[in-house]
Length: 202
Image 1: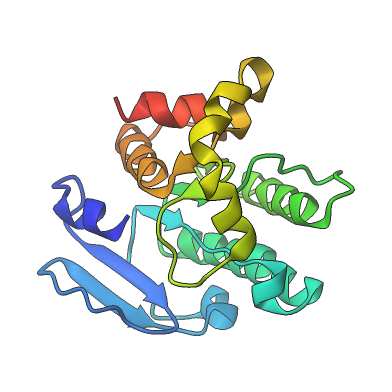
Image 2 (image 1 turned 180 degrees about the vertical axis):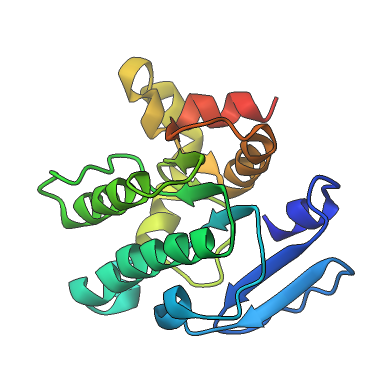
């Protein structure tokens, strides 16, 4: 995602916010270290137009359901509110297939609650991306996902019709879709699943 934004002339400046800086160096890149929990009340936010939120964790990585909710709901909504204060008019969120605030599945319910909270904010454009299994390299090892990836080549043949939305998709494809949609900046909220994400990158 970062490389795509830096290479795209549509954005003259790219600001990243995280717990640590990256090794990237670029003339239009500004990296800020911040506590995501206090971002919403920060008073020195730079002006931005678009917010790309790819923040997320797993219950195993977070350590508990409350810790998972803190990252995938509180931090995401806090970032969205901070973006409004910084002048942003578009918010792009990576959610997950099956997100539903009424779901009995905790993970899907939190994702759905987060989507609902973002939709309630007065952004001109809200773009929600719902991938299923994300393909690509991860910094941390996840056994379940690694096993699923081994079966990924045959899954498209099994998932068709209404099940197409559950097809695995490369993280790079999601990133390209987010950048393409951000340039178009459709008014919304809008939801993009498997077919819509792939179509936007063609």
